[in-house]
Image (cartoon, rainbow, N blue to C red; front, side, top):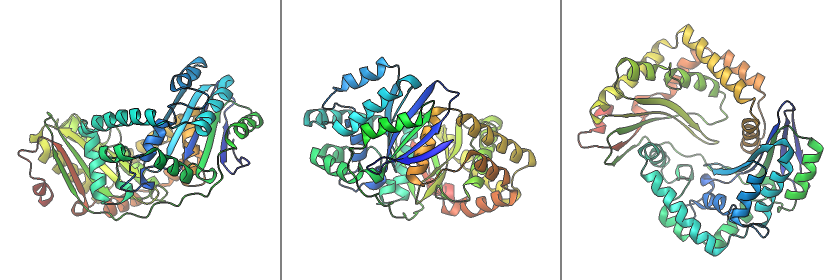
Length: 417
């Protein structure tokens, strides 16, 4: 059962008790990510995520890690385009300790100048690591090109020169704007007593400042784009992106099934035809990246540069076949069963439920019950899937990203065929 409550300062709390478990997951979600930044402070949300682990008035960075280790728990965080999440997973008997530790980090983090300087160095190493990863580059840089000069296209980590220039005062000012009550959701799932947990949350989080919820970023314009980067690696990395739906669109159920059949599983058409039957690539799959105000559907593959043209042409042959004929009855049935299984199995994890509930309330302000989601998936028809494919999977409107050995690659030639 899911209950929704508020702390005295206005922070929304979503609670899901799972009494058959011996564990509990606890997360604090802040509606602040790279989509809330500008050119000058891009990367600041990610810096804050790091800095909250670097010491408080009561604990050093090592003591934060040690205190979680003492209760056998896992504490972590991540920054996305639309939010930042801090979370802990532990045995139910230690949930109170986890709440106190994260509360200390939110209330009492020092953001010391020396620690900030050191952590900037760590983040720059992280940026370099992504720059060395063709699979990351081929995705990130294409989004940046497609949503040109719009915050939704910004890199989550920021650029090195921007990260270096961000000051402690800018961090404090950003937190004063975004780390406020109406911009925060606390999510708890697992085995716990609701009244006791609410008391703990009130004690440890009610002193955070009250403040208004931040508005969503503006809707970006989709620009069909081509991005290429020469890189001395053996494989050529390809990303094809199509303009797609926002996260909350009713068409999301048709997209989920279409993606499963197109390239979302090992029995998908892209995998079975291009990898298994033709042996053109080891890795190929499709995936969606949908946000509050925009979305994309991607096809990613890594291959020998000589195989680019046949991979590209076969991918669009598969798409055209889907648009003209739709799915077989067997494909439709299998994909629905796969999605149903993933939903139910994911629903049995305290961490997954905490994540799903927290993100849903933060970004959509409601939670769709599992039974309703399964019903919606089961109701999707062939006609809806074909309509989605014809509307969005348009070759003339696609975007392409290529990272690797580009010596003999003519990207414009790919689109002309």
